[in-house]
Structure formats: C-alpha cells, structure tokens
Length: 162
Image (cartoon, rainbow, N blue to C red; front, top):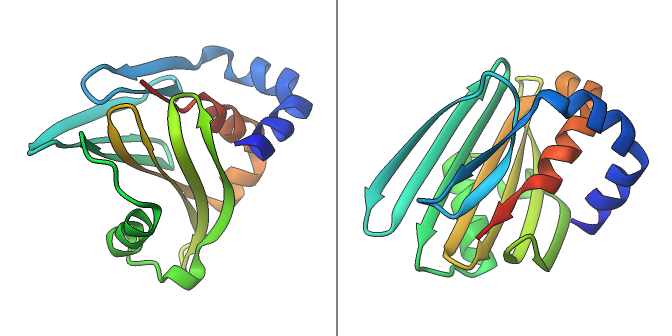
C-alpha cells in the first residue's frame, strides 16, 4: 500500500476531482469498506460457516470479494485459493504491493495478472483483518486501467477492514 499511497499523492488532485461522485460502500456484516463508482449495484450472500461474498459490476469493471469470518488464513493458502478461483496459473501473477498494519489490514498482498486472450487484467488483494480473511478481485480491461489509473489508485487506497 505504501507504493500505492506514493502514486496517489502525485495524482491526488486529479483523482479527487474525478472521484467526487464516488461514494463509500460499507458492509457491517463483513467488516469491509471501500469507494464505489456511481450506479454500482451490490449483491452480498452469507454462505454459512463464516463464509460470505460480495459481487458488483459497473460497466466493464467487476468486483468480487470473498470473506472467511473468524478464520485467519496464511498468505500461501490464500494465494493458492486465488489461483484456483481464477484459473490463472501462479506464474502469471505479479506481486504489486504488500504490507501490514494499515486501514485495518493485519497483512495484505496485492497481485496483478493478465487474463489470457481477453485484453483484461485482474487484481487480487489478499489478507486478514480484525474479523477474518479476505480475497478481493477487481477485473477490468488494460485500456480502462491505463486511462483511469488515478481512480483505481484512489479505490485501492480506500480499502478498509474493521
């Protein structure tokens, strides 16, 4: 997150102007909050036994969050789960950021991977917080990410666990 924060500092004025219509999404059920674009519609489900999930789609952007409440998985377990869930080989993932003790995250790792043959990329934020383990996926096109990088940095900075 430190690298993301440094990038955001340089782009903060532009990002703030573009993100002015964004709002905070907060799920007390899952102990999770972040910024969302206008018009974002959410689905959330409790799968039982501490498992829950969130899904949203806005235009070409898709978000999926998986939560395991009361269980604190190791990084290696969560990385393997991300590979299984996305069917993207481990070798395709690039570590973008990692850290601990910020915005409610006990620890986190952020990865990026291309989705073969689609022109799309996926970001995975894996980590634990006060209430359990979180696997967050954000998928969009390379073109959209490049054109809107300040907004994506603002979104990334907004990820909070409580």
